[in-house]
Length: 80
Image (cartoon, rainbow, N blue to C red; front, side, top):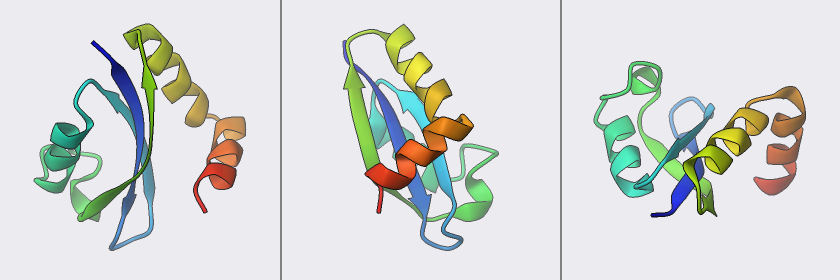
């Protein structure tokens, strides 16, 4: 089963959030429904980027990297 790293952007605040999940559309629905404490105050969210991985561990490594300082710089280049 593939696993994904995704980046969503708040339409109300412009904030980005990086996460990982096996079903990105379901996870995006959760964020927009307020079922995530961190993101519920910034709704609505739109998907701006996703990457597919074959293993959950790979996706979690990539998520951790994208949340780092260097990873945020990479995201600026990917998402314009």
